[in-house]
View 1 (tube, rainbow, N blue to C red):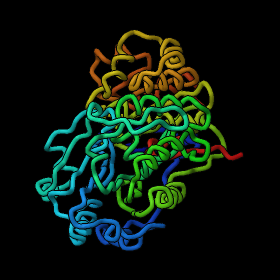
View 2: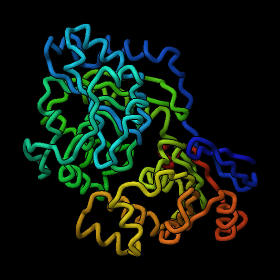
View 3: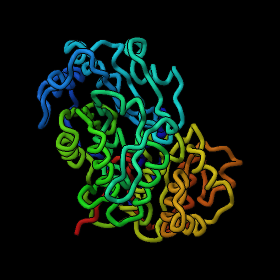
Length: 416
């Protein structure tokens, strides 16, 4: 049988003998919104557990709209125009509206990239800023001891609107909601201290209650005071299926229900081999992002199994510290031990890959340069079928295979 998995802007085909196929885990079907803009307007008109945005702002208010960077599939060009229109109709001029891209520690975006995300018209009308981790102010400390430092432009605003898309997140439980603010527009220190909790057992995909990372993210959101949120729920084709707007927590939880309906999938047994892709660009823009498919993919895999991951990685490894950790000849054990002793933001994902690697052989199919591939402790391929051929030699001709085409979004769960 033939399977086409997304790879960058295109696809890669992989052929699997039918007897080996245990199953293909696909997102559930959900009706696509026919008129995306109308859906956003409807959500703004009927916010969840919140007054309308128009009732929250006054003429002259300084408004900040937090939105996602290029590494996320959030449809900002659809979400933001109706938001800005409602602000304008409420007496807020364009000159008092700033769009800040929640980069966290991701790279800065070019003007062309920002224009592409927002649409040329909105880009030309509004002041658009990349978050700068070095321009943050201290506002207090969380219950878990994290020093909270937030972008000065955000703190100096009167109204904060958080936007983005909602999906599973491998240690924050879910994206969306207050995550646009923390880590989106926080300092490196704040992000690092929050992310230090990601080794705790409940810091995992799909988990909110008791998840130390998500709980602290929302505590930081409460400390700052996020006035309104607008989040998109997308299907596997990045088509809009729902928009939730309103209270930063209650609207987020409503969106969470849609994610679980679409992307949470029970399986009867674990596989010897998992073949997965993050879902193409931008989810496989670099290895730093591609890694997320590994996190969900391991949930469908036996200990000692093989995971074949297709990620183009057009931007290479990604985040600087992450790349440095993978290229300095450290063994997986070194990276895991390092994380226990000293948390370094960026390097933490290298340690996470090392942890997966301890119980799983990772075969990466990518366009990474040969000089990078030679330094990685995981196996590297340019052709997915070659990777599968080697995996079957290792696990045997009767090995059972699960295919997860949208691994960054789909969460397999073994039936209890």
